[in-house]
Length: 216
Image 1 (cartoon, rainbow, N blue to C red):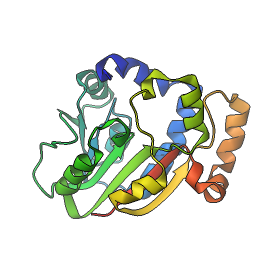
Image 2: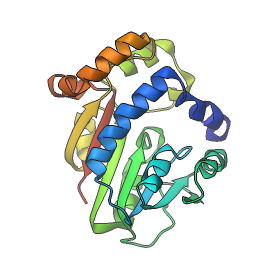
Image 3: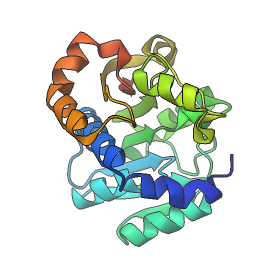
Image 4: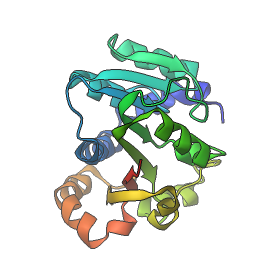
């Protein structure tokens, strides 16, 4: 997949009705798990166009964004000059051991041939008491079903995961969010937003977006 060609369309998705809806719910859960603190060093692996890096930057963290797409990083840099952007591979992270307090990888491992290698690298550059948080698309969700039916080219070469498959990476804790699909009208999205926390308890294994903390 050519992520440079995808970059502008990917970034514009966050300005669609469903994109804004999903982003709000996903960020809320990621931040709850990440527990970011002002002054901490955070690495966003596979940062895309910098949506999470920007959020961490606003919170006063020392942000480094890593991605293999130059175009994605170009867009990220336009959002904030306070973020360090590095062109690089998640499976060969160009930093010394024990560098970061917090590492996040959002919709990252779905697009990697060797996710185990990337997670090993993230653990290497994470400080001993640091937090490693992944946001992963769930194969057992309404969203995943709809994307398979639509044959969305963005996900043609992506591997969605279930929470049961993620446990092999050493899951410390996990939760899920996002029980809607792209085709739902706005009034229904607003209704489901209010129910999301309840649904994440009742239907926890089936939220479209899984957030996991990986053991160091």
